[in-house]
Image (cartoon, rainbow, N blue to C red; front, side):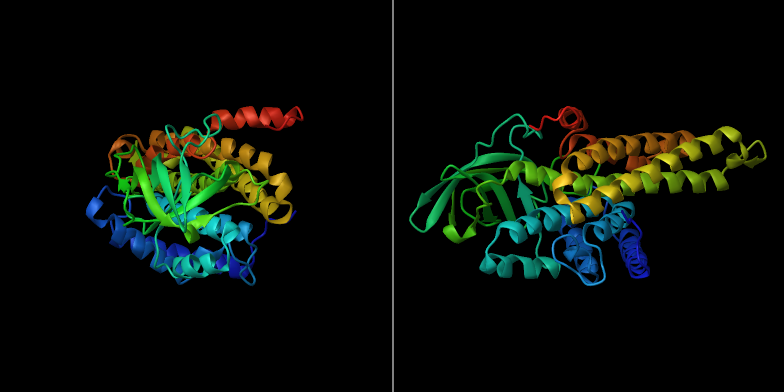
Length: 378
């Protein structure tokens, strides 16, 4: 097992960091500014399209390690702007990956080229009444009518829905799993206003409703018959959440460390106090362990994907819960300064809870990990 990054990969990470940090300083990427959300996401996609980032993990890119390179780059983007990261990944690694995996050549040409060029915003809608799809079957259905389909259903918590050009809607057609590619202007599609969320305030998340929404038959993706489409999409979401957890942890640790170096109490920097040093040591240990587990998960997904499912769930539980712990400890170190809205550690703390409930929740993940340990796979 080799989780080392090459010099070229490190150069990419530095390039992405400079581009995204510069954009985050110039634009309100993580503020609830509804009028600017689409512009912000478009600019983030444009900046990232100048690098291999949007293709990583979807298309082979020379001299990069696919999923492993992607995980390292995800950490950088998520640290620079949690909201932009979530929006970019929903467009690229969910909507784009679904088209690359299950689309035909014409569909790939139509949607992937503009996606990789940063000129298209996508969304993927799968959750219905709740975020949990493990125990509740999909009820959204498409009915054929000649050369078109009529799609009816409702979806909740759709990232990018209010700003997306296209939404891939998960459901059933002809008693098989299907993804319906719905244009934002399609008759019968209603998109609710953005939700006000605890964290990720700069991401546009809302519900959508499809009432006999008519789309051409060429705008449907059918995964292979043996594919568990919801489970596959959930695993992609979990991989995205791993990157988010690393980025939040990194931001919180570095913000607390820098504060401890500069803030003085009792005539000396607070980092000189042993209890502060111990707290930073615990945070760094959790961060580096999370990185190792996430990188191993990415490497396994690239080299032996059949072995990646349970490992991804293990990483999801550890990284997501470590992120909340690291962010919480960062606020303890920063004291009153950490409790004031607007600082990076406070923002990371509010975003960290989402990493535990999104994708496969950490509680359901524990059940699945236990089943795997007993040799029983659901």
